[in-house]
Length: 338
Length: 67
Image (cartoon, rainbow over all chains, first blue to last red; front, side, top):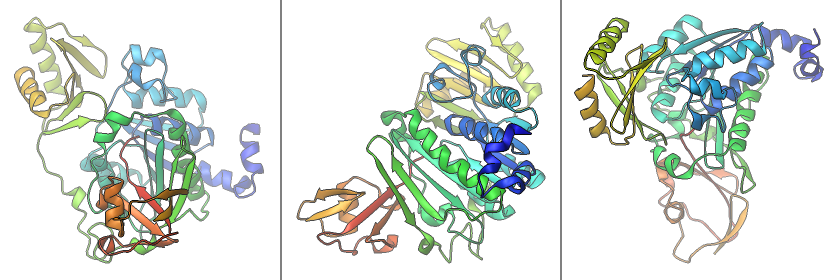
């Protein structure tokens, strides 16, 4: 019972608030730097249930800032959602932890949110395509979400409450091409923690039914800047995501193979329209027969052709490391796996 | 012209007179920026004409994608 005593002593939470936290379900999208830290804080705070979605696996370059993971996870190339769930359960066995190893696309997010009806969604993703999907799902199913992002030593966060605040699409006229800066600017862990501090604090407020911060917060931890901007005037009457004439453009899922360059990784992800577990097994035996040396665990297999490493997940997704060029990745993909 | 931008006093070149020019100067894409002048938020469609004046306190927030 001592476990949450310090948090309960904090008057805005108290014993009653602790009970509320215990009854809440949070959906964390992305298990990278932001996701791992948000998840750890909420699990320590005694959240009832956490669902964590991530498409990737742990690599050595993650360990500098993705606080849940260990060298062993990187050696074993464990999917981040699986590794996160394992560590989170060790931290607090009272929390129900549900890992999902998959790409957070429109179909999956709608499915998970419609089924689980989480109380809050925490954005820990690394691109705006997914954020626009989260934004539409949040409006459609009336679930608040907390935007968070960082690059270099700069970060920002903003809480979107359906029917109350402007949504992300109100604030952003177009999807920023953030990948360009991520490659060049890198990232330091203290700014991750600053973003996470804001996100977790707002998530706790939502859990205990307290008033959230309606302002857009941004900061630069290296240059000592911090500001909050009141953005309520930016709510648009004709917003396609949150106005009365909404169409949820990000949920108009196009069923095609998608290629995406992953931020700062020299990696291209391929998401085939149709490929299930069965084909995964067929593919594996096909490659082995061709004399290609394949390494395998329960969740993925990988092999190397010249300077390119291919990683194939059981849900059909493929990562090709060693290129930032979608055309080259397409060629390699169709050459070896198409 | 001297303005306080994100908390810092900055000398701006003389040709910068509007929010659009200011964003261009800092190489920030208009559509992903939020600008506040003396605690008043500026609507994006007004960036082209919104004037900035000596002594203004300007906050510029730009969105990033990493995480």
